[in-house]
Each structure stands twice: as C-alpha cells, then as structure tokens.
Length: 172
Image (cartoon, rainbow, N blue to C red):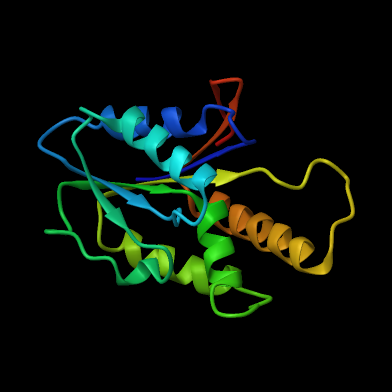
C-alpha cells in the first residue's frame, strides 16, 4: 500500500500519517524515516515535537537526509515505513551540495526503490504552491519539484489524503 498525505504547514498531516501506519494490523515492523536535518534550533524543536508525537507507537527511527533509496529494513515483508517529509527531502537534495535545479525524478526513483523494500509506505508531503506569491528563482524550483513529486506520487498511490485542520480528506 502506498499512501500520500498532503497538507499545509501545521495541518495535522503528520498525525494522520502516523495513525495510518499505526492502524496496520498484524505483526508489522514500523519505521519512521526522518529527513529533517537538525540545522537550527527551530528544526531541533520540530524534531523533538515529532519524536514526542510518535513516542510509544512502536516506530524504529531511521534518519536519512538524502538518497532514501539506499535505506534497508530488516526484512522487505511485514513492514511499514512513514517517510517524513517530502519538503525536507527536496530541500536536502536540492541545496546540500550546491544547487541542483531538478531533483523530482531522482527523488521519485529513490521513493520507488524504497517502496520495493516495504509492504506499506506512507509519505508526508507539503502543499506549497497555493499562495500566488512570486519567489526567487531557487525557491520557485523548490516549489516546482515538490509539486511535480506530489503529482507523480498521487498517480502511483493507492490512497491520497489531504489534511485540513487535522481532518483527513480522502482525495483518492
């Protein structure tokens, strides 16, 4: 099962994604694939908040900031991965080693490699293009990459959910 959970900042998408993984029945190994690098105090606070949210939910955390297709689990069967989150992953891939303008295909391929190694993959992503503001070139490319990834993943996904004020709306 491939699920994409979309939403704006602080929309409740992480909780919805965690609940989706937690609802999988049976003897399932749950992984939390964290992509946020703790560069700033604000990032560290967000990481701590997410750790607290998933406390006692049975997740094994894997921190991988780029090249997520390289991630390996104990077994490709009876597992579920929560990838949190596309916004951080895109930024890491685009800006960590200089500026890479187009990373959506590379990230999509990495996600498909990851998905081939697990039974269930729930991806948290951001809705970032609805404000109508014109941004600097690099930011525009960032937005385009996330939007392109969201479209590609939505097509492939078994389920697409939008989080609005903590309420999950099933789009697909």
